[in-house]
Length: 541
Picture 1: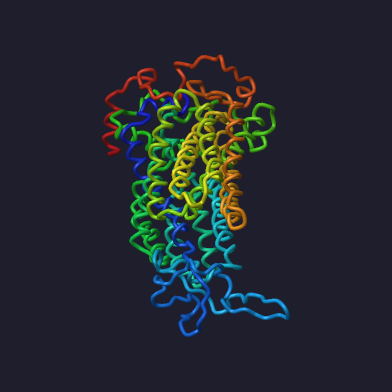
Picture 2: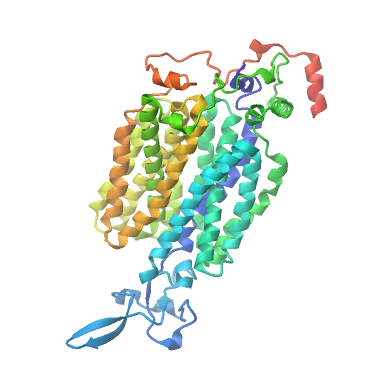
């Protein structure tokens, strides 16, 4: 039997799986905190050049009553009001005594503490890109570790490192150390995302994986909204960083409640441990593991013993076409998603309210995905990408003095790209064959992180041309929408198991009723339950 048939026999999405999804959803809230906190901790408040050394206080250049200053009167905060005479011409004097920052919105940020303005402003965006590159490194490092040491161990390790280094960030003595610590936190983000998703899906029957995968996205959206409230209450960047990181210590009980992946255990010849876990899951689900099931003989890979590598993703024509399109769509999704999210401060409206609404809009976006995805994967992917791209291009035509209109269009764009992000996870898992599914998702994730690295750099172009980031964030998803139409439709189709099946894909092939990836109770087909098995289950508890 295949592993999915055994999973269906013991309950493919029963009480055991639902409890598991509670455990893997809780860290998603903290992930949203870490991913979006730089919007507040790295914000640049209104500022102007320090004119009098008597009011200078260290590097931060804060003065009492800074809120009352009219920062709009300073046409160039990078220059002093002094003028240098050079023959027949005058030249403005660069700001030499530091800056005065408004404390109306923030008590302190990394920008105000280390004067990341004017010539140093680019360091803020570079720091965000380095953080995103940590996600890229983490996807490679923790992905490989998970295949060797198991999903549970790497997930626990990632949560522990994320908590420790997240707290350490709050005590960074200077900006370089801050960036290095944030880079390490970024690597752990990938460790949690990848292994939580894989652990959940490996315990869930394929028919329910679409719903189960999106459940974790809801938790991320909840964290997105909660961050706005936490940041509103805590205006000092160090205290805010500590507030979002310290709760990770509360997850220490995961050592005792988080299970290993039975599929991974079987793949690594740890059959006794896998059988024990499967029996426990069956008992919690009100089922039992049928005695006729010979777990040690399961064909958990869907046929074939040949080991495949990432090269097989582009070795044959159909695989190559689909892989390249998927890689690009992953890249675009992350590029535009974080381009929107990290550029929220440029919209000119209330930062905290906008951040909350940006998180709130993810809930209906993912709910709509649950409605339309069963109808069509291909048109859903293409349509949501088109919505995100068109909203960005429409923002180019809106004047800057209409912040409410800009914010409304940004919400529409965020809605589209969030829905597209939810679709691509399911679509990718269905397009890649079983023998390359994990490899394909891993490589796709690497391309996605490249988009995350570029997003802050593209946002930095706003200082020179406000329309350039919007044009880039508009055209790239529209191209992805067109390319998505070249992908096959996978809704209600049997999943491909081998590369050969991908190459010989026939859209006219009807869905297979007895496909082993379904959630039906197949226990009757594999043998009845006897009293000895029930007594053995009782002894396990």
